[in-house]
Length: 573
Image (cartoon, rainbow, N blue to C red; front, side, top):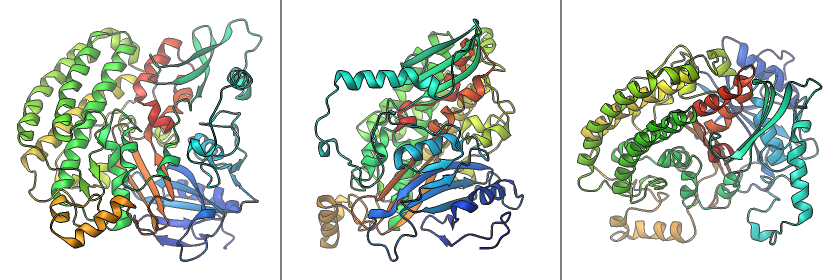
């Protein structure tokens, strides 16, 4: 390799994968120089670190050549100006699982590296706080390694003995000391434990808060209580049967979770989705964007002391869920998207249901503007609280409304349109001050734009099939299966054994309700994914709580938490 570590010229290999992302290999000893150049070199300008994960290569089959290493570190970078993305891979041997920390280049690397250490046992030299992220400190092993069991039945029944319980309680009590948040001799300081409880913390979240009087000195988020091993589950399920699990990641966003997963599988399989199915996907996704924002709006306002709006918001959400139920048969978790399309066509009368909703909701949004956004107490609790700049947002990996509130006009639906968004007219709301108040206003503005998109879907819904005629589409269209043996055979194989998706890798990102949601899938040519990585916006955003809360007051912390708009299932997976 060349000695010039300041240029992006010493990659070991480069290739274009099925998702079209430029992928480069870099040795661990060159990683810091490579990543620093990628971020700061004006010709590169990859200012955002979107994700860090890893792949245990030791059990991969059906590869044309042996893996370059036993483990692969995978970094995902994003250039905001044009949406260009780059995947950086670092090969590691099993006897040398160490790479340098990038927390000095991007502060948001800290949590991602901790998660990789927790799940794979890869060490990050120089990391300031390398410890478990999602699993308890007492956990033995690293769950996402291929030699770790994926079903509880493989490990025998679990019994919570008094000894285990005391060990876990001691670990939770010692966490502040372990993380460096200790009480000092100042009689005005104290350590306050918030959670894990749901009210005001929006899920099973624990915050250890160090206070001097009412002023916050530091905050330590403790997560993982909601961890269900979603990625591990994805690696044991068939490609088709994992779809319902995705609904439960961000459980208020419904089919929005299906979107990046099925598109990633379709990229691997080479499936082209019919135009009608693509428009139905957009229609349902934007309905769930409104549903999610209504939940955020009602609960955020309730957190800072205004009770009435939550009942109005949930009433409006109920109207939207009734439409979802009429179309999909289910409400919060319809799992309606399929590999190659959607589960079924729109029912008779669907358009009138949605038109009635389109006529109804704008007036309610006007009422919310008066009832909440002009309320003097609400303004006093939120204006100027939890504020950050555009540069800070990029450093911390903040996306979605939280990024656009800083004035950065970045919406994945516009920058890299998918599923037909380029055929629709809508604006991207932005602001110039990302405080708690503005982040609430952004969601109201986005609901209005979602209504515009939905109306265009209703007025311009194309005719045609809702499922691709492709042997790997799951399930095959019923009318074809009943008439055509060439459709019946792959349908039988896929349903009984599982679709065999060609070997390769694909990463697909969407503009989800809370920010960028990415599914990175690796196939080794079998009936289930070899690796499933779920990059969620809530995980990235939650680690900004200490950064935003330091120097504010305890009451402000509740407003900051609410304004982030996270779901703990989305954080913990």
